[in-house]
Length: 223
Image (cartoon, rainbow, N blue to C red; front, side, top):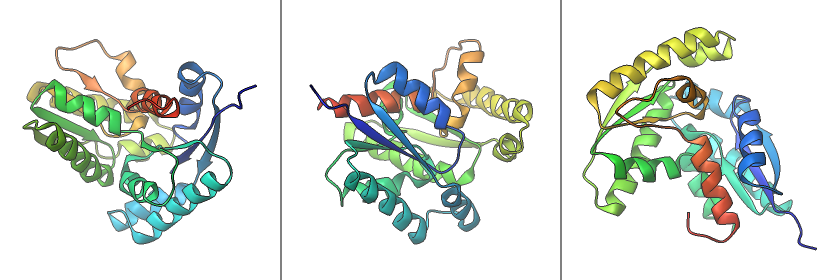
């Protein structure tokens, strides 16, 4: 009998835990998901305004423990610390998947003017660097523009989902008017897309495509 695969999902907050659990059930049948949540990681990144050495070390530590505990792959669920996940990949042999990588690969194929919408400024630069790298690899010429929905993330944490949604939707609307494709830099914004009327500009989110990419790698396929 084949042993079930195990994935460790590393989170910097609780927002995506249930989302990833539901997507895993839908898209990765038979795969066991272990969620690791450390909200101190994102708090430190926000305070410093960038990814710190301390946060990188802690995320790498979680990944090393996961690998030693029998994980078959790791999903990094926070774009703000995505570059630390790439460091992790250098020290363990199992796949480490950035939740936003598949989205970045898709974005560069859809248009040259790419909007990056975020509720946290610390997410913008890592996401833009990832998209720029994927564009360079595919020889796509792209222009990246940042849109920050200020106060939205704090509103979400405070339980004011309506304010969060209004601020993010306003930023998305502006980005759609000015670009060929819109990228939502945080998975916490993904639920808004289903509630919006389809527009002429694609709006990309990371959780679903990230989990699909993870499953492909678990099966030994190219992401």
